[in-house]
Image (cartoon, rainbow, N blue to C red; front, side):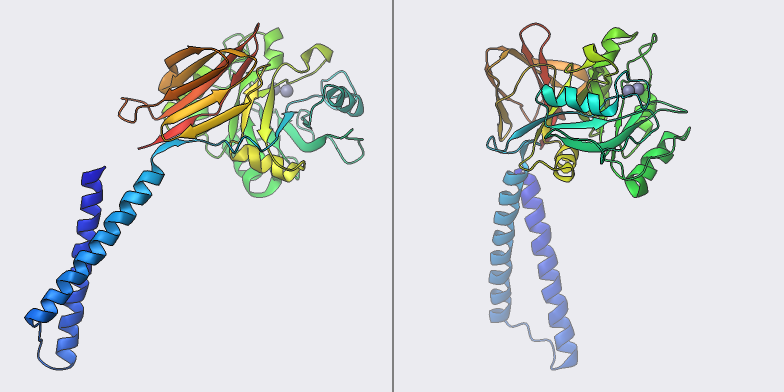
Length: 356
Ligand SMILES: [Zn+2]
Ligand SMILES: [Zn+2]
């Protein structure tokens, strides 16, 4: 850190010095012969020293502020909203009409819900939201790996080239993209790692998809997530039900930190990573200070801290944990926390990148 600050201050001083010399030379040409007296030179030297020390202080202050864990979480006082973004109705292969699905989630106490029928935008305006925020969206299904269009204005048309669809959503069709159930199907590879690496401009991926519990493949995709994160792809992790029938509800959900209950703010909060994914553990507080992260979750029994490529750095028992990521740790560009509760209840916090 220090050599870096010194180099910055020295180069700034050098530039300042050069500028003054040039100005003096220019002034000298236009008016009298160049006259850098001893007094003027001394004055200039003082000027440079003052300027350099000011820059040094500034650089040190900004470096200190820039170091530590980059946490996407807000103050503990900001309320958490619970929601599911992946829900089918009779408008595709779900077994209940849109209103019945909305009623069922409202009865479970959800704050927001997205109906995501296959290649179809299910109208939310005619529905009674039952106090929830309904987010317009769809699951883009045809011609390639499935993905959610979250917060759609118009339906994005499926294209074999998924980059075309992502670009369309980001520019015209509205909303953002989540890559779905990457480890679904018998080969555990509905969406392969190279595709996830190649595609740009998607906000997140499903690290947990409830319905895949009942299908071939794995409901989890933290393996691909850790590989992507290690390669510098900043992708948020989502848990969704992908519900088609009654026993698919409340398997996995998002807890979003958002002060207001409207679709626009909830979407903005998710884009910014102000949420964690859960299958049952409720996180009460997430704090960071420097390179230390502290997490409290009354119904957690154990925590694991993961870093690049899925290596576990710590395993801490209890309802609360604190971990300091050493900035000089080799191959550690981020840390993320998993919270383990009773039975198969889990919560996944978003990655926190190390600012070195
Ligand atoms: Zn799907
Ligand atoms: Zn689906």
